[in-house]
Every structure is written in C-alpha cells, then in structure tokens.
Amino acid sequence: MSSAQKPAIHYGWHIVWSSTLCIFSSLGLGRFALGMLLPAMGESLGLSYSQMGLISTANFSGYLIAVLGCSLLTARLGHRRVIFLAMALIGGSMILIGRSELFAVILLLYFLTGVGSGSANVPTMALLSAWYSNKSRGKATGFAVIGSGFAILLAGKLIPFLNDRGGAEGWRLGWMALGAIVLVTGLICFLVQRNSPKEMGLEPYGSMKDGRFVPLPEVDTKIDRKTVLHLSAIYFLFGATYVVYVTFFVLSLVNDRGFSEMSAGNFWAWVGALSLLSGPIFGTMSDRFGRKTALATVFSIQTLAYLLAGLQQVPDIFLYASIGCFGITAWAIPSIISAMAGDLAGPQRAARVFGFITFIFSLGQISAPVIAGMLAEQSGNFSSSFMMTAFLAGGGAIISALLPGKQRPEKG
Image 1: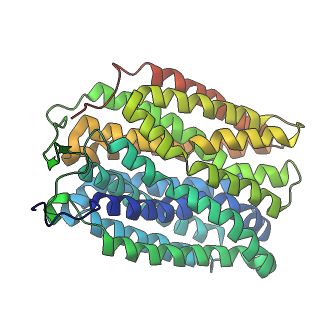
Image 2: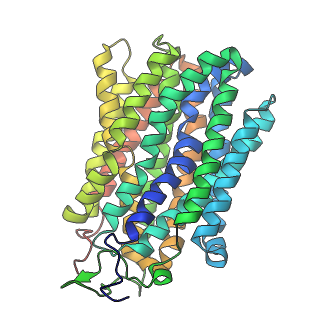
C-alpha cells in the first residue's frame, strides 16, 4: 500500500476496539455479570451456595472444552467467523436462561455460554497478536481486556434496575437483556474485524521504522515448552483466584454483610470502573519493564484484595480497599499472558499456545467455585473462600517472579 493510500489511523486500532467489544460481551456479560445475577436468581429458584458454584463451574467447563478445539476451528474458518458464531451462541443461550425454570436446564445453557466465551476469547486474543508487533502487543491486549470492565460497570447498574422493575422474576429480564446485547455486538465485530493485516495490504501495527512499515523479528522458530508450562501454572492460579472474587463478592456483600442489592451493585460497578485502567496500565508496564515484573506486581496487589475481602466485621473502608486493589489489576494478567504467548510463539502459532495455556487456566476456573461454595456452606460465610484465594494468589506472585530471564519483548 503506497503512502498516499495509507489511512491516518492504522486498521489495527479498529481491531482493538472491536476486540474490546468482543471481550465486553463474551467474557464481561457472558461470565462476569453472573455475580450480579446470582443473588436474585438464587433466591427465586431456592439455590444453595453449592448449586450456585456449580452454575459457575458449568460455564467454565464449557470454556475448557472450547479452548481444546478452538485453534483447529480457527485455522479452518478464520478468527472472524469463529468469533461471530461464538457470540451468537453466547447471546442465544443467555436469552434462553432467562426463560428457564429448571436448575438442570440452566446448567446446560450456561455450559453452552461457556463454550461460546472460550470460542470467542481465544481467537480474539490471537487476532491481536497477528495485528500487532511484539513491541506493541502488551498495550493492544491491555486495551482489549478492559471490555470486561465496561461489562461489570453496566451489570452493576442495569441488573438492580431490572430486578427492581421485574420484582421476584426481574433476574430473567437481566439474562435476556444481556443476551440481546451480545447478539448485537457480535454482528458489529463481524462487520469490523479482519483475519490479518495482509487482507488489507498492511503490516502489523508497531512494525514501523523510519516512517516505513517493515516486519519486526518475531520469535516463531522454537517454542520454549518449559516457559509455556510455567506460564500455564501462573494462569491456573489466576483462574482459581479471580473467579471466586467475581462470582461470590456481591453475594458475600448481600448475604454476609447485609447490603442491599442496589448497594452491592454500586460496589461492583466501582470494580468495573477501576478495571478500565488495569489492562492499559499493566500491559504497557509489561512492554516497558518486562512481563514477569508486571505479573508479580499484579498478583501481589490481588493477594491484598482477597485478604481484605475475607476480613469479617470490619469497616466498609476495607471493602473499598479490596475493590480498589482488585479493580485496578482485574484484567491485567490475561493481557500480559496473551502478549507473552505472542512473544513465545509468534503470530502464526499464538492461538495454539494461548489455547493450551487457557486450557490449564480453565482447570482452575472449574474447580475453584465449587470448593469456595462448599467452604462457604460449612463456615456460614465467604471469609474462608477469600482467604484461600489470597493464599493461591500469593503463590502466583512467587512463581511469576521465578520466570526465566527478564521476559521483556524485543525492541524493533
């Protein structure tokens, strides 16, 4: 493409905002809105803490299955089509949950939501690796993952409003409204996204030198399997910790601390608002100071968030501090791990490597909600559940610091 034909804004930025929209719907609405929906739904259907944990686990089981076959499906159909079909599955299954009466049916449908979430998330993050060079990848993925923050912010305000309007069955309106939003955003993503820069005659963003686009060297020869396994262990610990917080924090405010649903929703909205900073701040930090430094820093802050959430009979300021620590780091680790997958494997194999790492991550997501729910039933509150996550997050900080080398992307 000649200089006269080059757009003022590289198309990679359209890939970023559409990826943000995809994460907003596939993960933010498809998964992280569950914490706001559970209190009213649980009360309406008479669900126990263990059953609520199983609903979350069903979703993550679907996510796990999706990431196993996602790279093969993407290779056959392309990122764009897979993302669109996945978001159609998410939206449709969520709308049907809003019409369901039986616990078993809800489990099955939310399992399908999880299949859609995994099938949308992995190709989205791999798409960013294809569109961005290694020196800009952390920043790009950092902006994409803040979509979850927008979703939490929306859910924190919209769900209590719909519950108030719909009464005891208001939670059904919430599921259907969020599902409809997913369907609309899925269509927008399909219209905007492209599978690679080559489709538009471009080089990846960030591969600019002296005003000309030139490819930067990518690590695409030998994949360091030990580092991939190390990253997988780190991502497993993130999956086993953050999921307890996003699933049960609002429920703990309502059931353990006597907050109204509206007040709890305001707290949760603050998580969403603060999390908008998490990806850009720590993704850029990983580009500049190294991936492992950023990972260890994030885990350390999240450890404090879980400790504060687990304290009982303390002033509300401790809850605000917990929200602040979690919110400011909420989506940082996925953005850094995704960037590292691109660093290690190059854009052509990033989906496969990120898919494997995400598979291990999903194992943590599947097991943690059920264990946390059982602990809450035995103790009568969620304190022990949050303390468990604090211990695991502390381990994540330690093994992140033990990553080999500086883990800093090469500069072009």
